[in-house]
Image (cartoon, rainbow, N blue to C red; front, side, top):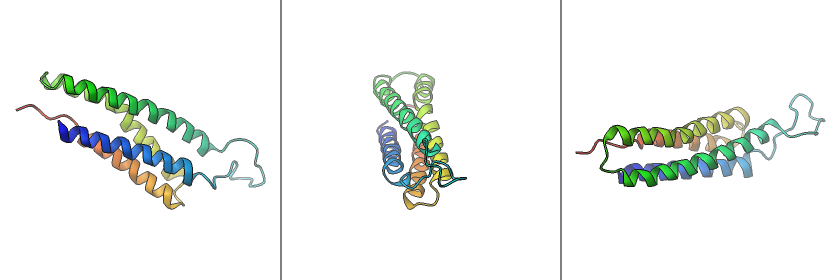
Length: 137
């Protein structure tokens, strides 16, 4: 149980750091309209996706934290109940990680911080998959 919680904690930190990297570093040079560089009106698509990603990250981190607290109290319950709760509370974090990796690869692949953010999102996704609860012995 402790290893699972540590993995989820690292996954949450990876998602938060990756969002911060995209917000502060990778989207600095994003243009509003790639087809016409003189057109500077409006918001770039990467900025819109980043705002959506930050909202989804905050929601999924809160749900993951709530699920982790509930998992502590359900430690001696049947495995199917614990696994169902894990899937229910951590699916948003894994989908947010996939979306973040996709945004990083599509829009910020030409910056070092964009590549690092994509790797952090991918690591977070893997850690969520590896952090599933184990059967009690």
